[in-house]
Image (tube, rainbow, N blue to C red; front, side, top):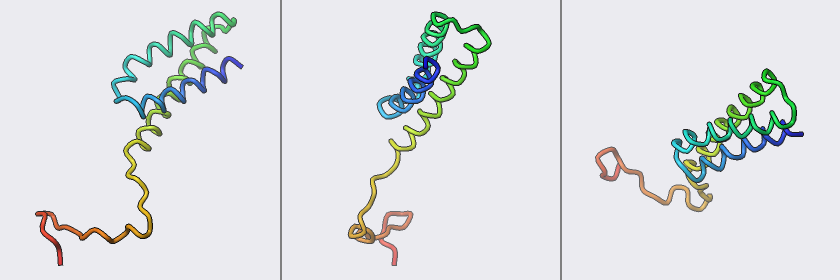
Length: 98
């Protein structure tokens, strides 16, 4: 149960960091997540090989979640069918194309 919760926290925190902050947030959140996960796993009796595997999984899901969140943050809003083609195309120099 602890492993599932830690992996879930890793993924969701990465997603939320991407929506709210820049990639620099991973610089301070990665060590916090790793040390926090290590403390929780040690308290629940995990030995070091399995603990390291879970921490690597948490950090990996954290970064995958960040990439997914960054993708959705930078995605343009969906255009409705009525809006398509209402803007005139422009050429590279800013004048209207023919």
